[in-house]
Image 1 (cartoon, rainbow, N blue to C red):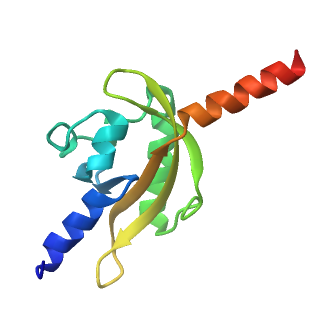
Image 2: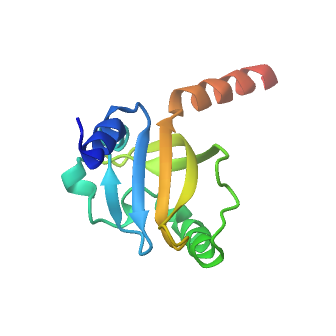
Length: 137
């Protein structure tokens, strides 16, 4: 594999975590195999769609406020720090996911969009909540 973009695409599809890239408008332009496994949407389903595809309705206002602030300021409060949040599966089921975020810049330093890596932690969160409930009973 000598073509750099082909190598990059192969790497993105090989990683175990979901990788989602959206441009400045919030349109999804990269969606790897792990994203399909996590969220249930194929790349064909997701590419070109707004990030609301996987954001529960009650979290959308906060998401877009943070997204717009990050683009405007060129910084993210959560950059590089794993964050527990909720997401939507294609089936409508709500997931607990742990995500990390970063801004993507061009060679001149201008923000082009945002990338997120995500993993499903639903089982862990539910197990921890059940343990806490049984301790307080």
